[in-house]
Image 1: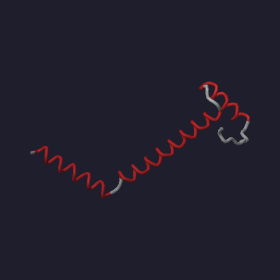
Image 2: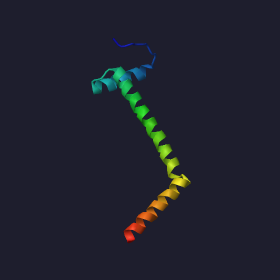
Image 3: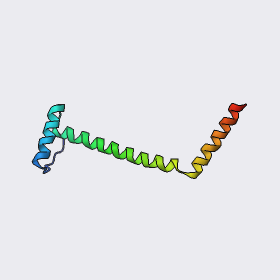
Image 4: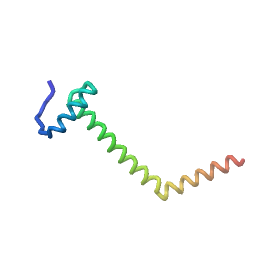
Length: 78
């Protein structure tokens, strides 16, 4: 048996959870878990995007990329 707790929510929030749950044939708990999972995934995407921007702008990485591109161009030229 799953652990449960009572959480006070506004009536409009409860009604929306029940409406979404009914349209998906899920319980309110399943709707909440799906929303939390999506929020967690969105947060990981934001962190990954920030890390990618930081890497993209790193001077050492840009220098290494340019060197590799020059080496590749030299190989293609013959």
